[in-house]
Image (tube, rainbow, N blue to C red):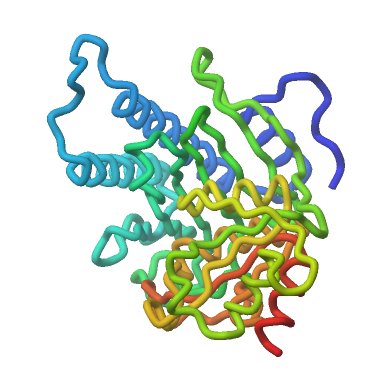
Length: 333
């Protein structure tokens, strides 16, 4: 991939235009979807910050319980994303984790967008990072025909773009399209613009950080427990640090930048795994692979998996190639 950066500050709009100019056959539709998602992210980030910081004229904050606050923000995020994507006229269906069924938008639209509108919402109360995860597919049925489940239940390898918007100390947009690497943009709130911060992210081949929720330890099988013991240095000469935030976006974000491995293995609590293939695993696996990493479920490539249902869950390990290969070997053997 050739370098796009020619000056100190590159806006998301400039990046999109220059990238699009590299492909004369491009219609600009995908670029429009990225703009729409970025716009929704700005609005969602502002609402989250307003909720966390509180209104100085109302020190007591919103009169909500934590669960009411979570529900309100999840609903707000879903509405903003749906509104932003509907107005373009190029989306066929929008699927959100909270919705009971896909939203049919335009028969002539050629894209399907799958969303986890707000992941990690239990971290809102402690001001830890949360995020929006998105995945974009090109429909497989003819334009103008009735929307079909075939357009939604596609393997992750068929994604044409995926990414996330992370809301924390700053709002970050991270996305990738096939062959163009993974790029990170940071929102300058004073200007209302996303600026390119890191171009073409590459995960280190080997990292020294592991991340998993150890509260499920008693439900792991012996192979996973053995791997965990190795990571902790109880078996072998493990020299790796433990980091776990509890927000999928934040944990994978750190793994993208610093390397290592993120795991959420199956357990007796979640025999088929907890994370959702369509809403979470496919889009993040696409990013990890585009950055030169590896993403698997029971030693199977996640992006090759044929989805069985929208709410299908799987076990997950993703991150630096060598870390994931080591984990697969130990757990498999």
